[in-house]
Length: 375
Ligand code: GMT
Image 1 (cartoon, rainbow, N blue to C red):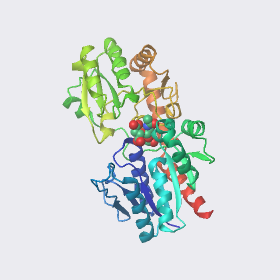
Image 2: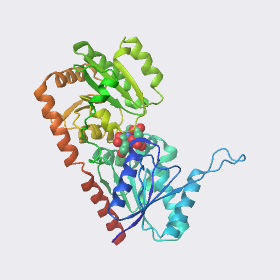
Image 3: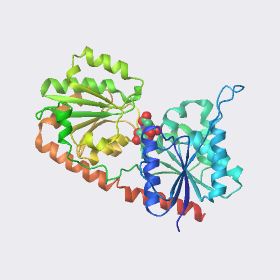
């Protein structure tokens, strides 16, 4: 049976928006009808699909009210779209506010609409500590028909922080392996002025403090003392000014390339030798998986879901948070031992295409949809 599925995500937010959009695309390719309901067009929805529709949530600013009523407008839109398009399922990404909006939207529609909620992290690991929100997060989780989280670590943390009376199933994130693979992008090295003997280290994030980009820069500074190397910093965000200052202080300005926000990351990974993800909070680490699929071994911190993505000593290294010396030693070992690098690079691709293959994960979500519909 083909389904009509409404998907709501933060379209412009990093990994969760990417996963929600990719899931919608892959479900559409399997013949389901997909209705994105969000405030702007999901950013990786860059191709025409006859069975993908986009319904924009319009939020007006009224001078009498201090805050625009986004949540209510979203619930209203969910109800309208569900009734008009006869949706079977609403799959929302983030408990707050999306699961709560879906519950209200379902009540407004008067339909027996099923709600599937996927937790991505920030709604639990940040908002979960705010007592003014825990009740609403628990409500959103408990009233959903099925709840998934992107790692075992996040399932555990949700139970510890929110204690919902609900089973939460791990469904890992995935990558589209048609896109994330090693490409021939050697010309980029030349264009960026990277010499053939230089190792390329990459970091991709939204430069929030939890990403610990300063640790990335400090580790790179140690690497660079041992071998010719360049650091690609991809993304932008609140920590950017601090990072620029640190790069200057360490005297490595000519070794660090600030690339800003970029699409087509697979091309940048294709010229990279090592990816650093040294976060202090990370429920999964989609960027590590994307790099691994392109054959780039990763070093990550022993935090959240990162060790479920990077297998220590198999396809990368897991190191203690903030332990610059250990991380630097591991990075130098990986970049100088050719046999180790080749083994990790091969294992990284195998893991990305095995455990996190899109086909397998999308099928898992479909099974969840059919199960809640059969209840
Ligand atoms: O990491 C961010 O700042 C963005 C955030 C998001 O909402 O997209 O990422 C979260 O969801 C991603 C997709 O499931 C995960 O890969 C990230 O690990 C997770 N971020 C955090 O837990 C901090």
